[in-house]
Amino acid sequence: MASSSAKPTRSISLPSRLHPNSQKIEAQLNKLKTNWESSFSSKETPLGSDNILSGLADLAELYGSIKELIHSPSTQQALLQHHSRKVLEEALDASVGLLDACGTARDLLLRMKENVQTLQSALRRKAIGDSSIESNVQSYINFRKNAKKEVSKSLRALKTMQNVQAFHTLDVDHPLQMVITLLRELSAIAITIFRYLFVFLSVTAATKAKASSGWSLISKLLAPTSFAASERGHKIFNEVGSVDIRLWSLQGQLRKHSGAKIDVGMVKRRLKSLDVCVEGLEAGVDSLFRCLIQHRVSLLNLLTP
Image (cartoon, rainbow, N blue to C red; front, side, top):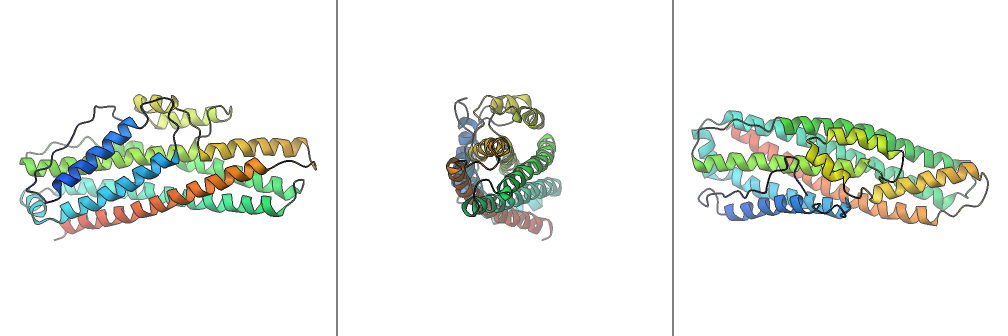
């Protein structure tokens, strides 16, 4: 997947004397960057939940490894010797923004799961033609509209975070500079993954006319242009969008053929698929949220020895 900065992949090289697992950390970061810069290089690649779930898992694993590096005596000594409080405070600010984004994503996924399961239950128990079916469908559609507003707000916040990623270069020795670079690149890739997660949760299939205006707003928030243009070129069709399409269609049929028997088999199948998808993403976001909290605690411990 192309990064929002649209720069070529650059490998980071950590001095092995910083920590025994430096090479492992280096490999994890470069793998994550490469995967996200290449996964969506083809315009035929759908924005799928599997890709995002994999990214969340890899990111959580990397945060675990970074925790070991931050706790290493050599890293702590280097940071304290060079009075790198400003760098740590910047990393702390980034951790707050990422925790906010992760918390919002977790809340959206939880409410989406609740809405999906409520609608599934309604379709199982009620006969088509019952007015409550249309009411439940409309409730889900209303949830989706409100969710897109929350997504837009989160994307604005992430865009602001990305704009302040232009950190000052410090006059420090090579090992410390590599730690600083690592923290900044880790934050940058986390921002990118969260942005794609929010796009996944908000954008419906591009074939739906109603989606065009919503995408126009989202694409502006995904600036720089290279990021937005890359995503517009892809098939924005996923488990979330497929349910939207089916429900819009079902809602139209219910209004047009009030009281008539309507087949909801496809809607049920799409909802089941989305339920499984959301459950997986929710677990991935929960795991990452815990890693982000631990990361913030590690940084706070450095500032308050």
